[in-house]
Image (cartoon, rainbow, N blue to C red; front, side, top):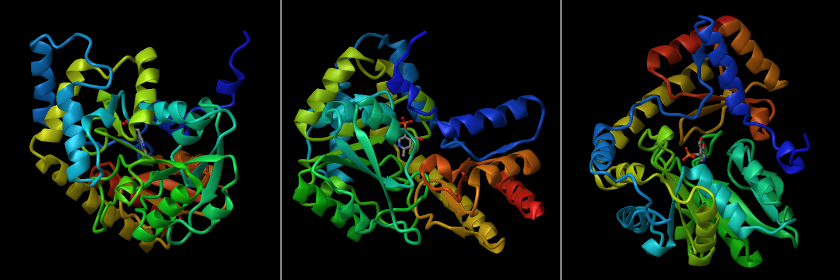
Length: 376
Ligand SMILES: Cc1ncc(COP(=O)(O)O)c(C=O)c1O
């Protein structure tokens, strides 16, 4: 059968491939410690689940406005203004089926065939795929290999065809959080070269001792930045498929056009859970952040004790570890011999590194580190 060559050129998600192999081993009864997926191991806080159940019981099972329930777009705009210092109103918000969907829609809305998109590497796997699905051309620009901050290499990568830059802070996979200088460099470039920025801030609530700053809060950036965020990581709501974008109205309106012909809207009763998440008690978010921080400190200490260099793990829930050489072979050895599933850095354009998700209980992390140590 003749199928789309565009889709054929897109690799399936490498993180899911490793997780799939790990799951197959687990099904066969092997005690695999899975540290490969980007998913909190906590359950969604009860008040959020209850709000969704109540919505279902009230019969909130019908179509909702395409950009999202007014209560949710208002809550997102208020949060974006108050916490992220992004000037915006609810008309600049679109609620989507997860942050991933928002990224896809933003690329569809903003790009024309052949437009180049700067992607800072190491990069999360779906940016490249979304750029290619929008007929754009990804241009990969590495961050500094010690600090994981933006360097002048970014300026050298710009061509007359450059249209967009993707920024992800805190970063998946490195855990790095961009500092004021990096964000300033990105903002200057966007203003000088009239670029659109896509700022993926889904890990914003998971920072450890450093501030998270939204790119769109910098002078002149709200008019050219699509800020993507969601509920998956902060509220342990990965399976709910609920995210959003806040951006200049013309881009959001184009995203709404795409959404109107694809998913139509985020799921109605799920959005009631989103309202409860944003407007309700935030103590569970802080509780999960503290648990991640404890695990982060533990795993970094163990890795350092074994002589491994790690990226500055200031955010998200990943330790990014330099192993040198063939990272795919190292990850395969960790799985085959130590029964630990991690993701090779090559999946993120960072050969020689491994991404370890520490979204697992401390005793499992301890066991995993013992197994790595035993590998020698
Ligand atoms: C950097 C980054 N952005 C976006 C997403 C997608 O999040 P969602 O579950 O809201 O689609 C992920 C999920 O792993 C991620 O790591």
